[in-house]
Length: 526
Image (cartoon, rainbow, N blue to C red; front, top):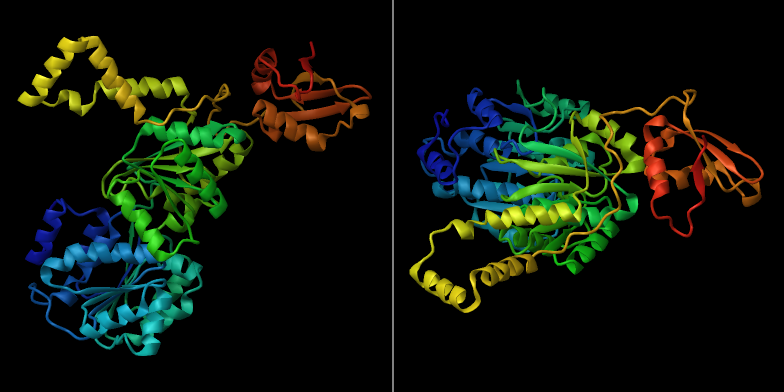
């Protein structure tokens, strides 16, 4: 159904951006009683920025027309990070621009004197981070006495970052008659206490929680060798060839290393982490928006507040620390009705941990090996044959040149040259080790007391054989987990190891293949 009861200027702005009907959270917010405080929880990427933008229309556009001139702000939106605050401001600018609203951002890392000048000139909406907004309140450059609506976006994240005192100061500075809209992905006790203290008879809205994972995101778990992670990322980026891709790492060091290696392989890639200045972060995001870069390698600083229109792929190069971070990372794709893919790289020894993480996040990924180089090249051929350039009706000039080329070189040579030029633009896929069998979801290894398969290793006490290093060695060499290793019997010159039957054939196959010089001699006991 179309957006109901909107001022014409907002309806026009929505139509120009391609919005034809509200998302569930937008529909729920618009259906709420006008002027009532709201306590809203919704999944990331559900359209909540537009939702609270529409919710405050009654306070900003009382007659449904253009906003009136003002020296002090009418609305205040608070976000946990600079990126999210700037993203919120961009959304409100296109939504309220036709209505004549002036919007100022106040975020750390930017020129505070410039912000002060903007505030002095008079603005209708102020969007900022908690610390910088409190700075302006203390300096007297921000007057909140006329604020009619206060929005707290990602309130749970702001409390996690330790901004409780700043939020209370901001809420206390606004008039008691102001309306407050509190948006939070989760509703812990601290959020509920904040709502009870600063909201009046708030309407509780909860959208999209019953089913777990995001309906527009395809989750995939990819098993790989721990020492082939970067090769796996190369092949995944090449396999999907998304308009934009976001690759998450857990540390700044990992981000810098991976960005450099991807650049060497020919990818147009930028980095995003907390050590960068605001200008550097803004330039990196802009290069993704205008398609000068197609890959962004980032820490969890990008897990919230990054909205890139063509971001079709998220890769978790390292598993997130918890289920909530998983949801926020994945939520960077599959936004506003668009489809997306979230891929988790899972080294074989961390498979069980990954399964627990997926269970906690209530997502059920499909498991697969890393696409092999040959598979990537085959997919390249399919994309080349279906290239839109070949389906477009050629112009007269193009036809004339094409005929001359065929006459001079032959159709086969021209087609081969076209294929060669197309391949030259693409980074080469990587060759990987043979993939191990994909486990069934939450597959359990055989119990330790079950009849396992026994293997003999050519090392014993005389060679310092010890389970402390034998178990990690076996896990690395054969891509198995600790749970799939049973009893270990060490004698003077050899060691016997019990292996779960489910992976015994996998080990025998590996033993028949090429061996490295540092491999310990092994054989199955019959």
